[in-house]
Length: 232
Image (tube, rainbow, N blue to C red):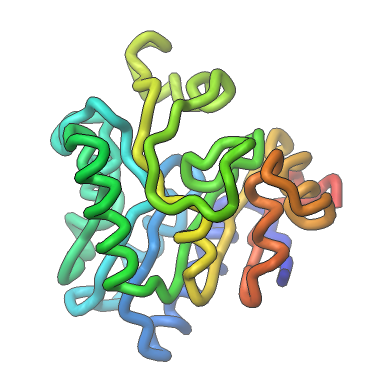
């Protein structure tokens, strides 16, 4: 693992952008993308950049089950507003939150297998989840339906009118699928991520800490602000 410490989210976004640019210029064609507040500064820099993604493919990590793609809180809407409207890709893939489970899981696994991910962007949950792969998720998991934990629902409720509006399930790219990416860039900011980051870097590799599997990946970069890195 390579660890890069930055002062704040803005600097983290700039560093992540440079890594994306290097991959882009080296011929990367498939980019695995994340949602949530963590990658927002990266997407802001990308929107303002001269990088052209019109011949590239984007594959997102996850989507809430029960939300249509045009729902204001869907991750499809998030990606359009934060990146795709300004930086169109040749193809974009996000799980269909209204699709039947078996068919959607099979479909999304086929998408990932047919388009090997060159660079995967990740955030990390306070409980060390990556994607929506909560503690206890088997490391060999591919795309699957996830029951969100209380901690994840609590972390995401600020995006909804009330906690009761937060979906309880999601489709998520599995840990095995994430690990298949050639390069992984994990972004983490804030003291509330410090324990998860420390367990990711130096804790035992255990399914109780989903992100700990990243220790086994050959090319992982962690971009951390001082607070997130405080327990290293």
